Image (cartoon, rainbow, N blue to C red):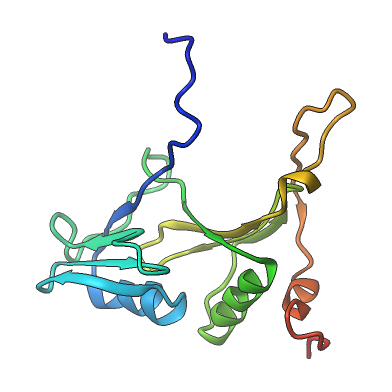
Length: 167
């Protein structure tokens, strides 16, 4: 095993998902989450992004048209994560999910981030989150990262950016 670390500027690239129904997945990723369609390949694949990037998420039916999700207890993708730039942007994502009646599986404060957990139409796990500034990350007495998992106050999140109480 190599003892040298990977270059610190390396990033994780796009996620490419096998889906059963391209239009159903587009209704979620484009229609609800608001990702932009950057390119399509007939009726079998679409690429989506935020901010003009070539693609953050690829969707295809090449091996999965009409298929079903993998059964529990098998290996594969646990979840994909979409990072929002601000807490207000994450609050907007929560409002979009609520308007589309998409249920959450969880909502957590991890100290370093606040996260919403849900499933896409093909039962893939999706995490929507924002990172707190590094200076606000929890640390132990020795200065090591000390992440945790606490419930996220969704009402407080929904007030973000609006200043109004949640009805």
